[in-house]
Length: 251
Image 1 (cartoon, helix red, strand yellow):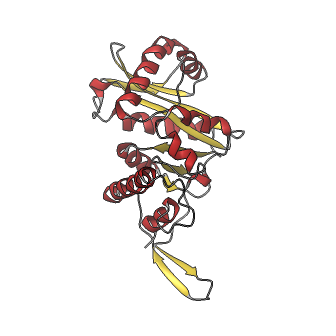
Image 2: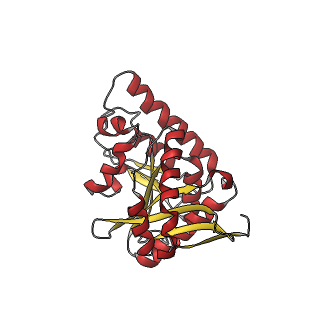
Image 3: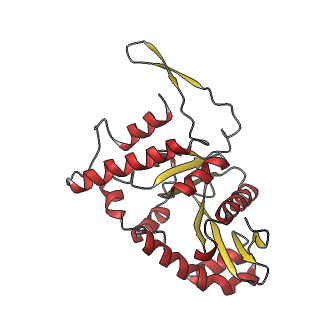
């Protein structure tokens, strides 16, 4: 990342960036063909005043990037939302710097909270993985209705609802402070209903970016295929996204 770019916690002095940030959020979502929860300049400004946002800018004050924190279920869950980088500064490493700082800020403000995210972006999945997030099923995310309402502006909302909010094109990732420092066995022992002992070797996502790419392509193939075929449910289907996720994490 360019050393002339400053990444810091936003303050009330930064509210003049709010309209530019929300405009770029909307334009970026439109260009990607996906949606994120629409936020007003007033909402973004409030996050700045509360110290629950990270902003990036150049030394001369040119806006570069932004991200903010949202808490759900009485601060049991935290989401780092609205990550956006100004087009001229993309692929410069600033997104990684912002994600790292907002993650640190989340841990400072909500040390016991589970930090989660939903994304279709492979680059964001890679960054999350580096920070200690793990891919999870949607059932491990917040059940707060206000959070899920934010998906209504996404073009894939129909898929989400047809799957009873159990999966969608976005990949869910979670950082759980209760287990993040616990050692994870490379081999998992499983006892089947028949009493047989099986051992599954764990396939780690962290740093395994080819595995991320395979996961994203396969998941999109399954969900988009079912959408074209008019199949609104994967329940009981061995190729369901939940089973696919289990397959990719464990051999």
